[in-house]
Image 1 (cartoon, rainbow, N blue to C red):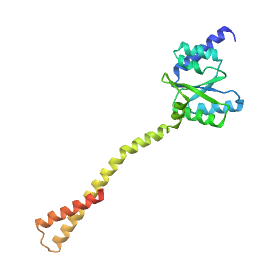
Image 2: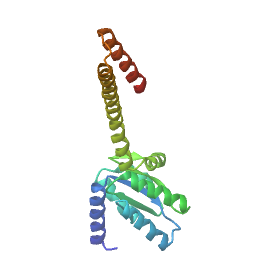
Image 3: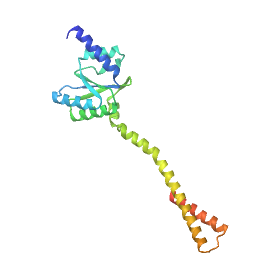
Image 4: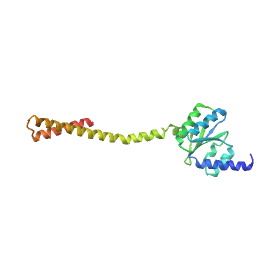
Length: 197
């Protein structure tokens, strides 16, 4: 490779490293072209890319942008997964691809300028998708409101039943005393409490 080409490759890698939310390095020795194509397609759908580059150039680019902690992973045929969107989705793809293809070995990486071990990448892959987490949070906020609404409905219903009973008693000509009114209210209140429990 001509010196000018190498300089350009290093600059391109620096830009990739700066723009990434996360980087994952993996050994790809033994993967067929078909397998590599499948990996690239799956990562692209997850908002990432897989780049096979000369390790000396990748190492130089990492050092130039202050990512020296990646140097330990630049040995042998190593590819760089550059994750520009949700690291969780890309980690899921990498974990599954590694499980399906013994020749693909995830080494480690970097997220928010902090080193990622293989174990941390696996934990990241186990996190539920963002949409599912947001739905759970929304459901958590919604549950107490549903209980309050059900309780309010029960109180209103019981008050309505008590009023109807009072109207029926008056219509039938029975004498309604203050004691009866307070007794009806106590009964209605107790029924509401039982329903809420």
